[in-house]
Length: 423
Ligand code: GDP
Ligand code: IMO
Ligand code: MG
Image 1 (cartoon, rainbow, N blue to C red):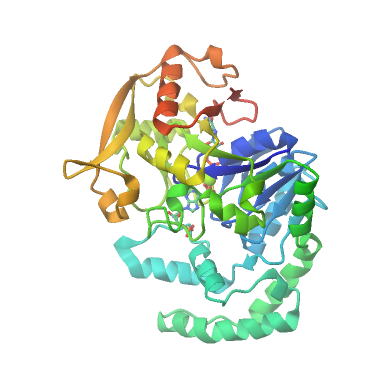
Image 2 (image 1 turned 120 degrees about the vertical axis):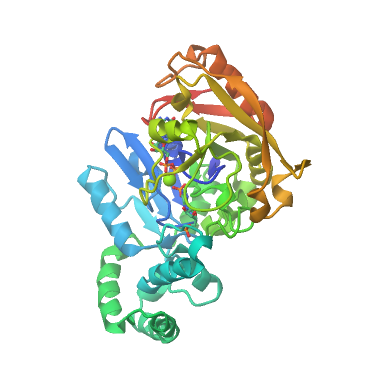
């Protein structure tokens, strides 16, 4: 029995989807518990290629039930679209997906407010995915949210919507936009909830029973540690708790029940959106990583910023999340690189400095200290056995392990499910 928590250890897009799709073959339940459709988890398996935004990445394993737990925020259009897409590809979703009625719903004004705040910030924008994530979580914690519970009761929904539109329409109009029409929203959402209803059932008791009966549960983290509201590079962050502690309120599980915490880490670093990125490469190595690695957002299609592996970040991520092991992804992208660099730490004004001691603005100014490593010409792409890796790749991995302070349990060498080495 295991309750395995999967956490992105960088700025998101580490390859969580790939790792979860691979590991969930023995999971009875896979649970999304925070974030929303700002996430894009790519999966390449026998059904095809998918970018999962809301439905748990484990849905492809026939024995697995997908759960969208209370901490997740829902765009109902996106959810329905995703169900349709999966069914078209031959994945049975009916009776294999459960959604908590506690989930907050992204309303049309959340997406508008997301855009209006970004426009107002100008050059200082966060570079959000524009999915309304910040505003929906802001409403959640300020008692202004609308949940699936509300949508299941038409009168309650209408009353809550009236209150929200009283305030939101004033803001929207003051900024020169057209006010939203209550009736139009009601019609749309009443139609949507009818289609979602068959999946809505609080999964709490099912999860608790699964723990009692020693079933395997996988908790699917979204985003990455350095986008965490508290511990990420705020305000260049996302609006949910990404670090492992967020899984317990988000999924309704006690901390003591979590048995494994796997940090998913790219062999290099990427970031999409604005904010500090000490090891960013603005040269041809950066371009090469982007092109070879296909580093374009799975959600927005934006080019991802690329840079060297940063062990200062991974050491911190390992500590704050309590990683029990690491899964390294995209090792194959380095095939053919003659030299690789690893950031071992930072200096600021000539003095050694830790990530956690400084603000995002100061992180812009730190100087990474690099250790140079020899690259390899032999192919690692598709490798399935550790002994088949070139000695330089093994040395690179050993160094990542040493600097991170956590053992590597998986090495992913390609997009496809079975392109992976288990140690
Ligand atoms: P997630 O959000 O953490 O699930 O990651 P994304 O799906 O947004 O981005 C990871 C990208 O890398 C996707 O295109 C994956 O198909 C791809 N990927 C994952 N692991 C590997 C790997 O080991 N090698 C290669 N070449 N691609 C990988
Ligand atoms: P997955 O789960 C990468 C980033 C956005 C932006 C910041 C805030 O696929 O790893 P938001 O829309 O959340 O308010 O945007 O967070 N961001 C991600 N970056 N991967 C993600 O998810 C992300 N989700 C949000 O680019 O910088
Ligand atoms: Mg992604």
